Image: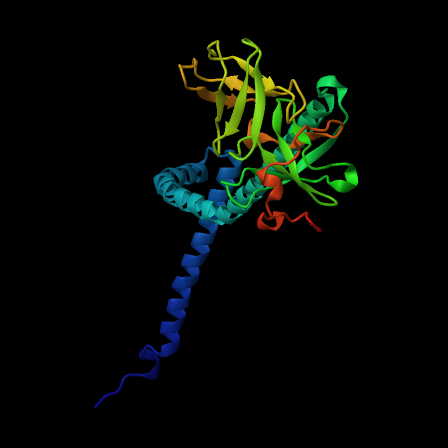
Length: 309
């Protein structure tokens, strides 16, 4: 069999050379084309082929970019909002704490102003006859609402004694019925056991006012001739309390019937729930300094200020 010469067979070297030749030619061509496009783009200052291609790419990808922005913007905003929630909560709590502190300070200031105003009023009070007085403050209440008593922060060491009248700027509050060294107990005129002799400033007739537990008082006139009218002012008649102290005003008109006493209701001059500073009249001795409350064992009423009995 005849054989072909060795030179007539295509070998591996020939194939590799051809592939290398084509790849090299393509790479060099693309490189030169890129160089030419860049050169034309620079010379044309953006109006050349490169500029056109760039504008086309921007126009092609603009909707995609807008869509991506529309999708990512709410997500980014949500993430920013979530990251700021903790900071906002802390700020709200700080502002709330500051507001509470300012409200507390304002309440304290208002309380001090109210007490100062009350103290000024009580210090400006001039009892009838320029009687000497001692200024005191309500220190505690009775153990229950049914106990018509108040404790003051002045006692025997300050000149307070049994039977002395206690007043404020509005009128008669009650009388001292127990005294300790540094405190004393006041029996209010709203207590049924404490009666007050009064005079009607309109009719000039006298009667008797008694407490009924809370709120209103009851007026009894056993020898009244003239009727009493709503708004008639009642003051102490000088029997058990210094004369001329405001006790209250008549709430309902009334007249005496044959064989019966004149009885009606009276609005106290003093608002018992609001008393704070008071004055004890120490320069007047009542005709009758004892009453039912004076015989009561003071230990039955709670008073944190009492140190001796």
